[in-house]
Image (cartoon, rainbow, N blue to C red; front, side):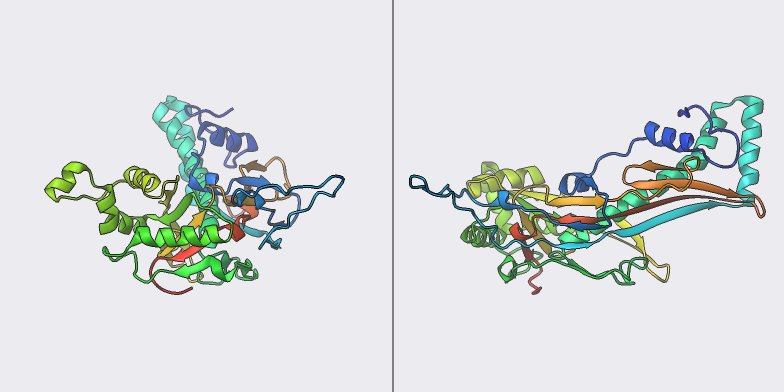
Length: 365
């Protein structure tokens, strides 16, 4: 097995054991997307939502008369939504010039057994393996947050998904009452953010729903931190007496919210930054959770990222890491090698009928 101090096996093509050993030695840390939409494997080429009736308010059982049938409760406002899985991937190549450098490193290690050279050999392929794994995780993260923060309606076009633009738009039947916009944008420090949250809370309770999590991106959470009303209720006694205020932390705001609303309502901040290339090769870096959008949910988890294994054509050069396939192949004439990843999957928002989607920028949906 390859370890952190042992160079990758001889030859200019990675073996399956090399790939598996590298990922075993370098595990990928879990992120917020793993809590919001954990991975779930399927054997189908499509996905569909599952019932989310558990997110209703406390609804009592029905009284029964002697020998009567037990009444069946309907799933209000819930319809099964289905769609296709998307295929996406990325690759890194090694040309003749790269081969020469790699062979020189191998010769240097064979001669000196220098640990520094061994690390260079590991990094030669390891950096590519790390890059490709991050690319797949980033696409999963982008799709997850882009879908959720668009009120579960995302269109695959060249501007956001150049290699998936043939897919039909994913549009859930979100009810009209579940979407609204504030009258004063939260970017205005004078906005009454706590009042807006109270309005959403009352609306959801009127439909038999409840909220405990408020999902928002980092930029717009900063507006919450700098909000006058929020700072007022987060202020300590000393701050109140001296008329000094500072931007409270996430923990301070969530602590204040629990007292203010007399229930455990917490902000969940999406801090991810994803770089994506559009059709013309231009790269943009942004938070995958849309600006000016706040999503109210009953729990942290709102669904699953459903994925299907891709058929492995050659077990000697292809293997699996997490939800995607990793492979490597070599061409002798001309000298060329490619490390690649490919996966098939898509996020599924099971709680779409239990969420509330608020435009905090005061712009209507």
